[in-house]
Amino acid sequence: GAIAYNILTDRKDIIKPIGFHRESTALNDTDMKYLLLYLEETYGLTNEKKIDNAIGIVANENKYHPIRDYLSALVWDGTERIRFCLRHFLGADADDYTYEALKLFLLGAISRAFQPGCKFEIMLCLVGGQGAGKSTFFRLLAVRDEWFSDDLRKLDDDNVYRKLQGHWIIEMSEMMATANAKSIEEIKSFLSRQKEVYKIPYETHPADRPRQCVFGGTSNALDFLPLDRSGNRRFIPVMV
Image (tube, rainbow, N blue to C red; front, side, top):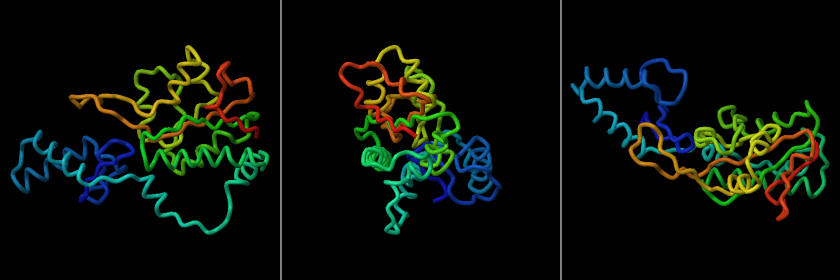
């Protein structure tokens, strides 16, 4: 089918040519106008609500996840890369700590893609001077621009789901979101959360939205770590 439900973005996509030029895959209002016109002229169908419901059903029966598809198509060439990755890109030490930190973060990202909402409350925090390439590194890990975001500024944002929706790697630039948090408990609660319960405007009922993303932090200094007497196990700093 030409219409599919994108599990990552929680939207309907058009994944095959449908007779007119399009700039993106996401189904938009202009697409709907063309589809309604086509169905009216070809089949005499004019009930817009029923057509919209039918499109939703068709899309839901034709689901796909772009990140899962991307990862599943990869073939390892036998070359070890994780151990030296942060040294190669950012000049970090190639010791066991750095290796385990990045490996844990990557495993968390893969798990969140294949098992949305799985437990993963770790944030890899890259610490180093300006211009070191910290933000660029997280962007590269996300593979595609649309799978990356650095727009999270507040943890208590009412629209936080929209900030997470459709993204895989989310950077907390200069740890701004945690710096703006009211308490350490708010930070811990946010990182430990496995889902958001949210109702998008055109829906009648709220639904669970399992998290499909992981969080990376960047900072110029180690003093970004919040004061927590129970420990800062959720934050894994790596000097670069």
